[in-house]
Image (cartoon, rainbow, N blue to C red; front, side, top):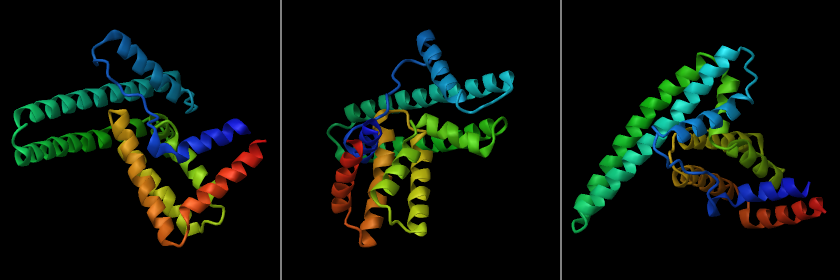
Length: 221
């Protein structure tokens, strides 16, 4: 029980610590390919895919996505580094250049996102696709949603629906991020939006958190 509440508290403090491991190995490295395959295998193992051939195909789709995201992130970082060197003395030009890099990267990821989900949907049910999304984002969505419900037991049906909608939107972005920082930023951004939404509804989030910590500590004893 104590372990469970410590885990929930860890999600509540998500904005203070990244929970994602950044992929830095080159995509053509044999060890990295093996690692991404193993990571994908762990996700597939939770899906209950009965057909071995289909399971292998899904594994390959997920592993290839991991490698693709890493390639995009590496390229993005290289372009940002080069831009900062080239426009070190021209801040307006640097800002424009960096925005162009971000826009181009996001367009590339958005296009791949749709294609990736289509590939998964060819073998998996919508529920299984969601399991893949959670697997690629370390289950932060269901865990964070559980924390909000545990911390705020009097949430209305409408509030619960809005929290879930924003967490799902955050997950769509986070699953495409190629670094721990960006995955962290996406969930952190939407968690901030949720907290502002609840505060506007008259909920004292600081007080609610303190009371939740006390309840959690009492249950953990």
